[in-house]
Amino acid sequence: MKTALMQNMMRLVNLYAPDDVRVDQVPEPVAGDDDVVVRVQHCGICGSDLGYVAAGGLAGPTGSAMPLGHELSGTVHSVGQHVSDIAVGDRVCVNPMGAGNAIGNGGGEGGFADYLLVRNASAGDAVYRLPDHLGMRDGALVEPLAVGMHAVNQARPKPGEKAVIFGVGAIGLSSIAALRYKGITDVLALDFSAERRERALSMGASDARSPADLDLLAYLSERHGAHTLQGWMPVVGTDIFIDAAGANSIVKSVLDVCKQGARLIVAGLHRTPVDVDLMMVLMKELSITGSMAYPTEFPEVLDMLQNTDMDLSAMVSHHFPLDEFNQAFAVACSPEAGAKVIIDMQS
View (cartoon, one colour):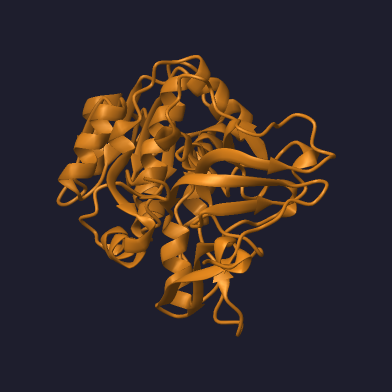
């Protein structure tokens, strides 16, 4: 006969050191008065997870296990007595940074688990109900979509403007979705992967090219028009440039071709310093703005998904069960992964 302790154990993915990831057996969480427990259905592998595993933690090993996973959907399993707007059985997504939790980002909980404790859910910004028509698998995409939405919001888009995205992994694809939602129909995608370029077209990009041997000035001039600045400098008509790749060459490429008043949003992770020609920034009045996470975007993404018939299937390329996490992680690390790798906790 199983003991009560055995009956209350669950699986949780923990990171111990560089490239040391384990699926552990740990006790199931119990909700406190202000908390909820979510029975996790799906959780995506994020690019930041790849960085955490390579480093052994947020910035390196700490000697303690770090739970992983922060892009998730599930059903509410239990609620604390102070939680009034979420009920058992609700289909939800989780804002991992809501209520100061840092789920899967150095906090005490992680989403690659059978059950997830969401602390301080009574605060109202950590757990959100999914639209009725949205599938649970698509619910796990709300978090990356919020990252793309914040990048687009940082660009302050106006309907009719023209945009180009460098890198169309999950965040680039999410940015395409957000741009289209904001009324930007002329969106170009640049990526070395042919599969990702096809996915960008499926998400609504008007064209997708490989940056290999691409004359950016000629290409953007053809697609977005061109003129001369100060009577001699050729510039293109692109309004918004989104760096979702984190390649150091992107900033110079944008400065070389952008028009006066263009906006560059840095949403990709740059691991080394980048040289910036401030004379060109001055002459072109280029705005360079960083974009980190999603301070306010979860409700906006849910509104987008509630009020559009957006097809998110192009954002996901692989599904794995939790017990095959290491195989899934190896696929996510591959440049040929294609798109988002999702872990399915429940069969």
